[in-house]
Image 1 (cartoon, rainbow, N blue to C red):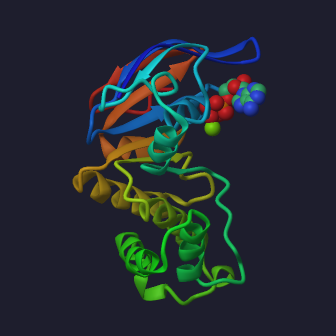
Image 2: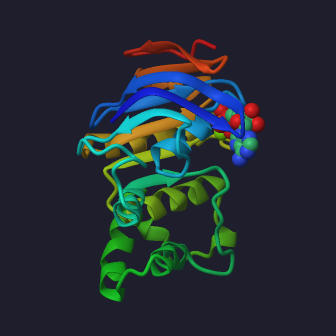
Length: 226
Ligand SMILES: Nc1ncnc2c1ncn2[C@@H]1O[C@H](COP(=O)(O)OP(=O)(O)O)[C@@H](O)[C@H]1O
Ligand SMILES: [Mg+2]
């Protein structure tokens, strides 16, 4: 997708100004920046949840998000974009399997699709063997993986994680990165917003840094530079 001349604001408070950024299909990209630098707001813009004040986000289909899209197409786009936010909510009294299945029920999927997709997604995050455990029995690391599985059931072309390693130890963070690396090898575009230098430096992927409402650097096989 091509982000051109995008300015994002709340009321009249500008969060990001004049952003130009191309994210290629099948790319693996980190968005880095300190707290409040606008990472989450940009992600919201990319997933169809926050319209820019100025500028365009043109998708690979050549459609401009928000502009030449009716509600139905925008809904479909949102579904095809797998996003994982920090505050994943799990139902503690349900099993791992049920937590993923429930997310699909809410979206109106048919039962046979749910029965097929849930095990597939759990397998992708290495949780199939634990599918009958209850949410309250499992570690933070496993909860993170449930939230990834919930995004994967929609077969997204793009998978976005906003601040994945909030409460994770370094070893766990690397485990999560392995999952994303594998997804990227299966031709999914991966976008990760983070301020965790360990994961960024361990991956040697493209790193785009935000500061003072702007992109201050864009490195191909980059480091955490802030
Ligand atoms: N819903 C909102 N309403 C008003 N201001 C917001 C809202 N969300 C974010 N902001 C402001 O936008 C700026 C960027 O926030 P955010 O995108 O969450 O940054 P980051 O994800 O990099 O920490 C902050 O100054 C924040 O206060
Ligand atoms: Mg954020």
